[in-house]
Image 1: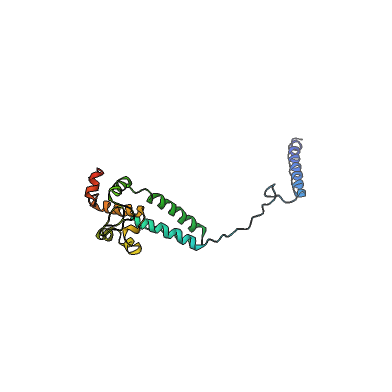
Image 2 (image 1 turned 135 degrees about the vertical axis):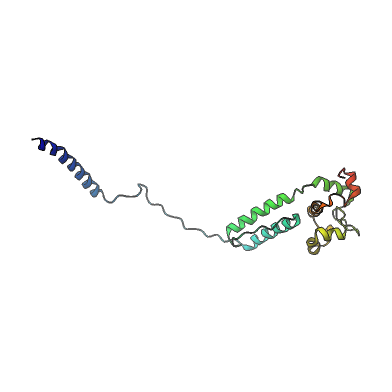
Length: 184
C-alpha cells in the first residue's frame, strides 16, 4: 500500500509535464522575439567630392607650414566621409590656432610703429618691415611661393616673426620699436 501512495505523486507530476509539452507543441515553434522582425534600411553610400577634401588638406598643410608645425596625415581615401571629417576638423583647429600667435600684442605694437601691412618700400617690406635676408631665413617657402612680405597676410607676417623669435632672435630685429613697446 505504501508503494501505491508513492507512485501517485510521481504519476501526477508526469501527467503535468506531458500536458505542458503537448500544449507547447500545439502552439508552434517558439519565436525569438514577440516583436515583428525589423526591416534593415539599405546602406546609403555617400560619395564625397575629393576636390573639397584636397582643398581642406591644402589649407591645413599651408597653415601648419606657416606656424612651423608638422603636417597632419590621414590614411582614409580622399573620397570617403571619414577623410572629409578628418580634414575639416583639422582645418578648423589649425585656423583657430593660427588666428592667435603667441606674441600677437607685441607684433601689433611693433607694427604700429613700423608701417602698413602692405608696405612695399625697399629694403623693408610688410607691416613688420622684414628685409630680404630675414624673409629668406624664416620664410623661404613663403618667399618663393607668394613673393615679398607685403603680399602676405598680417597673420602670416606675425607667424614668420614668431618663428624668428622662437629661434632665439627675440624682438631684437626691431630694436627701436621693441623698446618703444617695452619688449626689450
